[in-house]
Length: 387
Ligand SMILES: Cc1ncc(COP(=O)(O)O)c(C=O)c1O
Image (cartoon, rainbow, N blue to C red; front, side):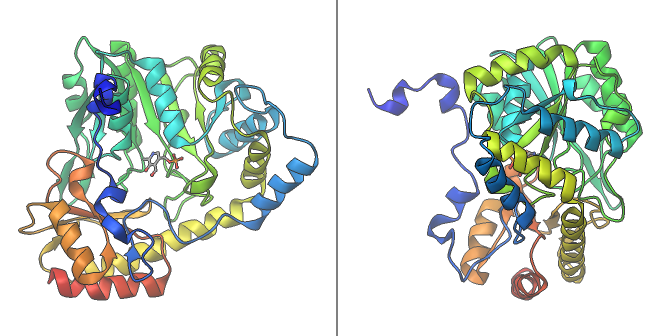
């Protein structure tokens, strides 16, 4: 029996396709302008590395508390309390190895094999992939796309909940759309989940990349501490720490012990000195977050200026948050083939719409978190190919 044949059924059910598999041999090819992944060209500020080295030399190199080192949890609690309108205490925070790890823990906590979870899509495919890995059916409810942009009718989410639904997942600001769900829509989702006894998993990893404001609207402003709500966050995006693998989750205080045990039995905790670096990022990294936000906003303008000149492209209003443009191309029926073709012809790497949900075959996603010269060159090449 081969290893794959012996793998558990749900592992065979996960998609083996991702951007890396579509890129063929061209990952890291210097002639490619890489707008396909969800990371940019800025590096985390030096203060983060310095704090990490300091933590090592101060001896923070032993096992840490399973919910995270107290210092980082306190720093995160103060940070979230300062950003929002309701206080968030450290007893509601568990440090994780990333936003992805937070999503996996949230799903493990809320769902069992045979259950289903509903994701608001277009959505980052890893949320559904994590569900399938657990034997949980990943369903989607699609946002509407019109000339006014992306919007969600929360009633459609309510209508799709059935006896096996254990969790609803949404990201705001979204990947790939950049759409921010208005507070009344988030409130309606929360109310539905309260009524139906379903967990709500709110992914806020892009919440500091909302243009012209400090942060995107957060569901923490309207939720009670004991709501069945898990808010997922990460250092990857606003602090450019994708390779550091550090995130956190906000959860009901009554779940802290359970999450400590789940951490114990999966990773036994996040690298101790890394957590000290995370505390420095939160406390001293605000100038960097502001620069990152401006970088994304400038990139958004460059890419949208070019796309809006192309008659075949439909964009809706420019995204006001996040690091992506998700645009529709008239006549495009196979977004994977289109990405492969554009890569071969232009050397620009894009992500296919099909990755982000059923019905997105005519869309492409570009990451705008790049310097001006790279984006202008990418758009020069793409404009000719998409004309
Ligand atoms: C919506 C969303 N959530 C979570 C993540 C996970 O980020 P990380 O695992 O790097 O913290 C990503 C990464 O692209 C994302 O787009």
